[in-house]
Length: 199
Image (tube, rainbow, N blue to C red):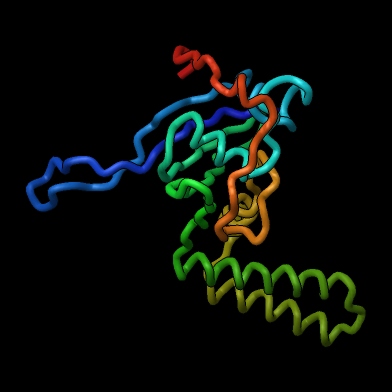
């Protein structure tokens, strides 16, 4: 896998600047990891025999706690040659267990994704169908879905991009449930020197 950049932010309650609220929640950046450092941390990037060798989400959660303490973390990831940013959200507030938190989708987004899934099913059926009547019927269904949900090429591209996520590690299943932390490779050498100049 190509190297990645990570921005690690911790969920924090801070005083509000407006008089309406006393406090608000913000994600404050606690660390930034560049391409060369990611090769040292993740087993699937760079030399597999050197570094911390993290290959599971349970190991990454333990690494977060070891380096930055207990808390809720938002991990933003950029990869060389990959368009866009991926995010992971870890709840590492418990001493023995962690969980990944899913990204919340709007009702509109859920409807669009459901419609897109139906469209793909009809397109697949259309490719294999020989009967002209049935083909016409499938084309009409596809057009109807596009019209109802106002799906155009731009929306289709955004749905497809949303499904592609940068995968750094294997997820412990079932996903979004609590799991125990797991030790990772070279624990004695888990701290890394961060070169702040790259940002």
